[in-house]
Image (tube, rainbow, N blue to C red; front, top):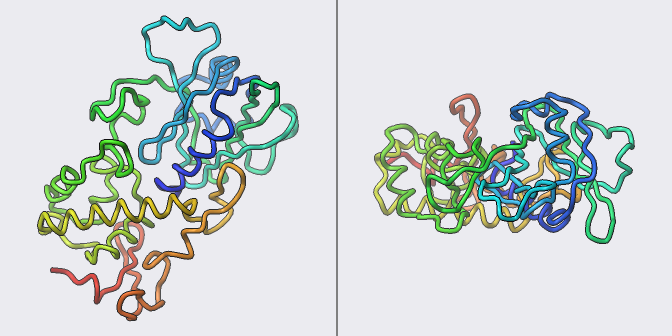
Length: 301
C-alpha cells in the first residue's frame, strides 16, 4: 500500500504537472473507483468539468486538489470542494499525453483531461489494479487540529502526519505513551499519527532500536522522542528518493519508480545481516501482517 512518502511524491508530481490546469473532460471507465464519491459518475463528471485545479495537498495517505468550480464567484464565502484521492493498495495517478477519447489503458479506471493556459492538453489518469482506491469530490471542512485551514471531510478524522507544518514531536511522543498496546500498532493507528504503514513502521522502529511489540506506555519520554525523530527522518529520506517501489503497483506521476527499496534496513530484509550488528533480520507475525526486525538491536525492555 502506498504510504506517506509515496503519496507525497505523487502530490509533488501533480503540483508540477497539473496545478492551475482546467478540466476539459472526464471519463469514468469503472464506477467502482468512485466508491468514496457521494453521487454517481455523472455527478462526478459534471462537477469536475470546467473546474480549475488548485495546489494539491496531503495529510497522511489522503491527497486532495482544491477545485475552483466553473462559474463560481470569487467572493463566495463557502469553502471550495476538492478532488480527493486515496490510493488504497495499488492506486496510481499517472500523467499521460493521450487524446481524451483514446481507449482505456490497462487498469485505467478514470481519466481526467486537463488543459493549461497555452492550450496544451494532458491527462491525469487513475489506475488501480486491485480496486481498493478511489477518487471523489469532497467538501472541505475546518481542520480540528488547526494545522491548516481546511481538510476534506473524509480525512477530517485522521491525525496530522509527521511531515506537516506545525507538527509537534513532543505531543506525538506523549500520545504514543498513552497507549498500552504494542508500539507498532500505535504507529499504524491513523488516528494517532497518519501516513505510516508497515514499511515505514518497521524502518522507524529499527532506526530507533525499539521492538515492534514493546508496550507503548513502557517507553520513556526520551525513547518515545527518539522514535518520533526516527519516523520523521525515515519519511523525509524516503520522500527524497521518491518512495518505495517493489513492483508495478506504485509509480510516480511520470511513470518512474521510487528508490527507497535499496536503502531498507529491516522491511523485507529477512535473513539479511542487520546493517548495525550483522545478525540476521527476522520476520515475525504481527496482527494480520508481519514485522521485520533485528531481535538483538531491538530487544524488549
